[in-house]
Image 1 (cartoon, rainbow over the protein chains, first blue to last red):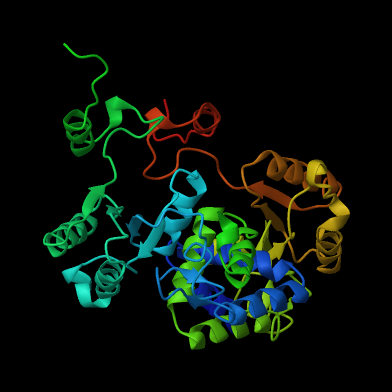
Image 2 (cartoon, each protein chain N blue to C red):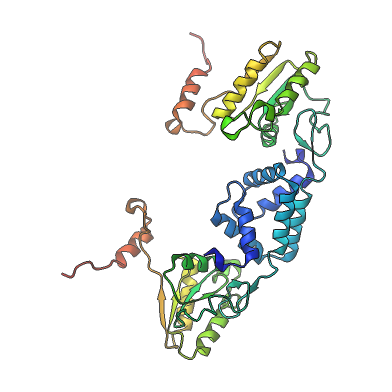
Length: 205
Length: 205
């Protein structure tokens, strides 16, 4: 019975529970952990929250979140200017950067086209991407469409493919197939079909 | 690569990740959700955090968290004074209260005896429980030991059983067995053994 709890405790539980992926039970647990801690820690956490957006900006080139505009990636002259990896979110940039396998630049769309959620192409940084490609005057040679393998991700990739059809530009998408460490037995149909379709030749006949 | 992120963003990710049950990926997700939101929401969340402990106290009788001391349960004269349900944490009080099946009072230990975590009986509200029983002058007739069915919970229950051995007092513990909706096929050995041991007679021979 939540009404047994002091209102200040209930408010924090509600605040946590309003965040994605935190259910009411987890929200309770988090709140009681903090309640056992020191007031100093609470104040520190609070100031971290209020300060979150301060000293934070969006890079005008790639729309990534950054401390300065343009961001460290876009100002890094050692990076390959010919490749732009188009991703949905900032977290995707971090995921790809952490592999160390990509040396080009990024473009963060800020979401995917999703009619259900009322998100159209105009809500994303697609216009900016188009401008970026045009203004590069041929320097950008490839767009890697690295959307999530979801329905909305596919739709967004399709939209971009059509949009850039008249432009002389290589368009690629990330490979589909079995994930490393995955189990063929437990793979879903779509993954198996795409793993078969995208099979690599080991030896010619 | 976390170093790509502005330091204010990294700080909030770290703050979230220091909470129990929140891994680095969830911490990132939570932070970026908040980053997309309004500054007002951040300020609100922050003030909820700093205000958490204000207007919050511990009930001197049952050690439950409360807005006033003694708490609403301990001051509720309609409740059965003869039964005290001894629980580990405040959240356990909420869990039992939400069933509506218990009309006695509570005693919150504030944890369990756990030598590994350096928690001894003196770190819990066990002295206070002893005093409470003595001072009730026979009014408390039963202690329901409602610790979690864990090693530490068992150890704590055992300690309390020995402690109250000389006192004229009924000691009970919560029943063990198959959880409702559980599957016998998937039950662990200990649960099955305890379900067999604690079996109820439906018809006498």
